[in-house]
Image (cartoon, rainbow, N blue to C red; front, side):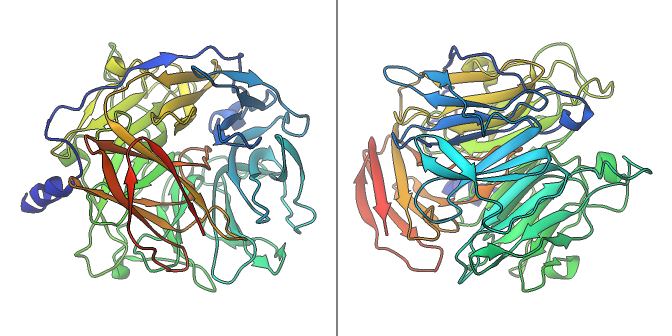
Length: 505
């Protein structure tokens, strides 16, 4: 009880205990639907990234059995998008995508996840792409890929890539207990070695490289779907040593099994170390990192203590358990405190789970408690939601929302709120890691310090590359610094609210 009180005191925020719900307005957009058979019950992600150099993020939405669609950002006075998909992106079988600069040329590339062969596509500017997998020695077999993350390991000129495969469709004894392995691609110079199989695999639906203890090395967290591994499996954390290995209980890892769908990571407690939110079928888990557990990878469940359960529909008459998919932290009302968005929806027609399952917006108050506000915000969609992007889509300092739905149209919402101050931070690292992946941004005001780790991965088949958004509450300015991925620490600098600040190495 005492620790919870102390943590609540250091959470940055305003004096008011009741968070002000933002207002989101629906945006007209060309129809796009994620569809397909059982291989597309999962997946359905969206990538948010600037591919034409105008600093406004495009949206690349998975289509499943339908072609994937690129929506060019045409925002001006309000959000606007135009469906304009080059042939190379209009492929079928896409479950999700993650943007990153793989070749270090300053242009964002795409890792495209598929039911089939995964693709690495080089960005050429003006939203043009070409295949880059063959030139890099990247070989993908016919997999059912549902998760991805990437990091830069020390001394490497290419990122390390992790692809999470789901069920082995070729296993005649499947699908239950037929989970495929996670595939790790490590560079050898300017090309990739053959994939290392991280075994056992337990049907990964989300994964995330994170430097969880600020040691300078990112380890790989994997969230797995026990619907198919049935027994003997659990969530995983791989130590990224020369030969990767799983952390165990002796080191502090707490074994548990859930219907793991998505991972989100953010320092909520204010101790500078990442806490996690995990989506599942039946219960969504918020876990706080325990800095007093001897330095090991220990997270303690704080779901009920924080009010982040979101385990049943919060409106309507369907009282069956919710099914959570994409999760994302973000300060949607710019009060200086991170909130949580959860995309929800039945897998298909599972009778044990809610059929009308509205998305959740869990807003944090000044005491560190979360409360449901999606109805007031206007985003309580009851479509079968999957992937999402909680991103400032027009650089006006307010987080907008795009949600991919299964067998229903893509939804885009513009955040029309205007109370509270903000800051956008654009990071330009040195080649080859131009996105400064693995770096930490720290921002402090009188209310406390916000810590942001720059990562690629997590969510549910949905990635974002671009500006980092901070809510400042009533603060008119703040102090900002970056700790680069190689450990170099820059001095604090004073920044004004309402600005886009670029940090260039």
